[in-house]
Length: 498
Image (cartoon, rainbow, N blue to C red; front, side, top):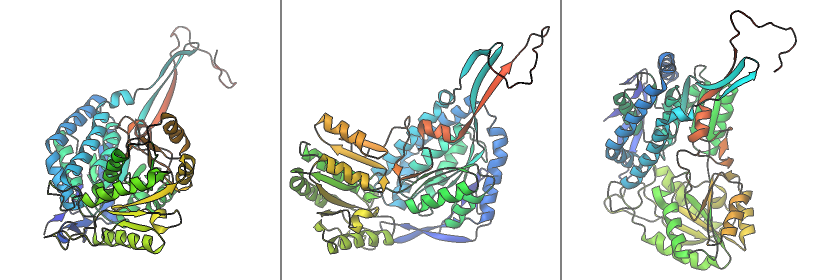
C-alpha cells in the first residue's frame, strides 16, 4: 500500500516518522493509502530547511519571485485534471467541484503574480528641511499553514502563494484525511523553479499542529478549520509570540424574501447546501424563509433535494459525492434524528440512501428540515454535511436579528428583488461576507476572505490585501544627506520637523 511521505527541503521523505494513519476512499469505504504522521523532530527538520532557505529567498528580487508565480499558475492549469481527480478520490467531492476549487485557488496565484504592486511602499519628500521619509514591507521569515480536509488545494493556495511571493518560506500541515494534493503542489513548485526549502509539507495530526504552534522558528500561523480548534490555535500560537489568523466554523444563513424569484432562489440554495456534500465553510446550512415565502420555498427545496444525483465523485453524471468519513456520515444522520426529536419536520430524509455498487461508501443523501428553531441542536451546531434547515421569520428585521444572535459570522446571503431591503440587510447583519442574490459570497482574490465573531480569531482575513499585510511587516526610514561642506548640527532636544 502506498505511504504518503512528507516533502522537506525539495524532496519526498519519511524523515523520522514511524506512525501512519489511513487515507480512505469515501466512495468505497476502503483504505487506499497510508499517510505519515509527523513527530516534533520532523517539524523541526521542516522549519530548519525553511529557515535556511529564507536566508536567500527573503533577499530574492521581486522579479524572480513573480516569475516563479507565473510559472506556477501555468502548471496549475496544466495539472488541473490530475489534481481534481486526486481530490475526488480522497475527499469524495465530484471532479467538476474539485476543478472549481483549483480554479479559485489559482486566482490567488494570479494575485501573487502582481505582488510588486501589492508591496509598494510610500515616499514623502522634504518632510523636514533636507529630510525624506519612505516605507517598505519586509517578509517575516518562516510561516506555517494548517489547513482543513474540505478544500485540500484551494485553502492552502489562499496562504502559501502570497506568503512566498512576499519573501517568506512556508511549512504546510494539510489535513491527514486527503494529503496527496499537497505533495503534488510541492512537486509543481519545484518544477516552477522555487528553491528547495521554500515550500515544505509535513503530514500529521494534533501532535504536528502543536509542534508548529510552539516552534520558536515559526513567525506566523494561518489556520482554517472548526471554531474550537481555531480558538486553540489562536491561543497557543499567540502565547508563543506568533502572528495568527485562525478562521473558524460557520452557520451560514440565506434569507429569502417573498418578492424573490423563488424558483431561482431554490436552485441556488440547493446547490449551495448540497454541493460538496455540504462540506464547505461557506455552505448554506440555514434558509430563513420570510413571511409568505415559506411554504412555496420549502416545496421547491424538497423537489430539488430529492432530485440531486448522488454517487462517486469520479462519475461526471453525479452532482454530490460522499462525506469524508463514516463518522461524518453518522454525525449528519444523528442531527437529522435530533432535529426530528426536538420538533422539526423532516421534509426530505437522506439517512437511508444507498448507492448501488458502493454500499460501503460514506454516503448520506440530501436532507431538509422545516420548522427549525434556534434552540435546536441542528440549528446551533455546525453540521458540515448535506443538511439544510428552514427557519421561519415574520419579516426582514426578525431575520436580521436571528442571524446576528448566532455566534458565527462567516457568510450570509439575501434573495430579493428589493434594493432597499438588500441594502438594509447588507449593512445590518454582523457577518463578514454577504451575498445579494449570490448564495456563496466568496470574495475574489483581490479582496480578502474572512468572517466575524466566532468565525475568526485574529485581526486579519486571509489572502488579498490583508494577506499581504499579515505576511509582512512595515519598516519606515527617515533619512538626511547633509551637504559634505555643511554638515548638519545636532541638538539634545527631541527632534521636531522644521
